[in-house]
Length: 245
Image (tube, rainbow, N blue to C red):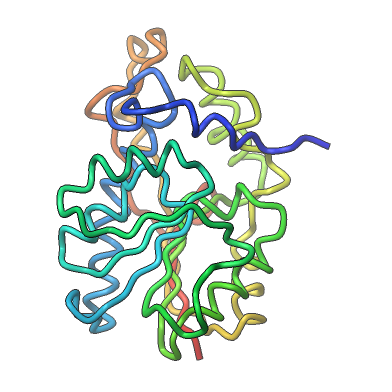
């Protein structure tokens, strides 16, 4: 049975923010769509930045945590990669994010500590997402929101998210993603309901394929103008929110 490779996150350093010939560039491009959606969602649910404590799980180099802190939110970011956390701290212009090395299966926080938990591109990297979602529920206050992004499990997602990236992005590590850990939306909503959440919203995300040229494909690099967009289809990847009852 293939095991997902999470070790490569320790190797990036500042390339988190600069690399083009690496799938981390795709994550940066995705963030340009995810961040506005997350901010809009928090505003629609009346979470005031100065009064809202956010836990960003699997925060990596701070692609979400640092911008949220810049908006005035009280942010804690956790990750198992100490190297990634070091980069996140360096790129935190507010110097306000509390970055910690911690295990999502056993969060080092008291019950009902946070108003919001975010987990972007994280759940498909763990073996038991349902247990982790129960931990998210434990540390969330009643009425708190869990916001996530992950990948659907089907053949199209396998081709686009795994094989296309392996074929055309130069420095894609082996087993960066494995299909068996992708999560169908119905499964994820089931995990959330079992953990005491009610469904709020789901939206799909897909690449703008028109922004991919043959020159880019041959170069093995992700172009600066590469974009993702929201879509009603959940076939590839999807983002969503659930609210703790």
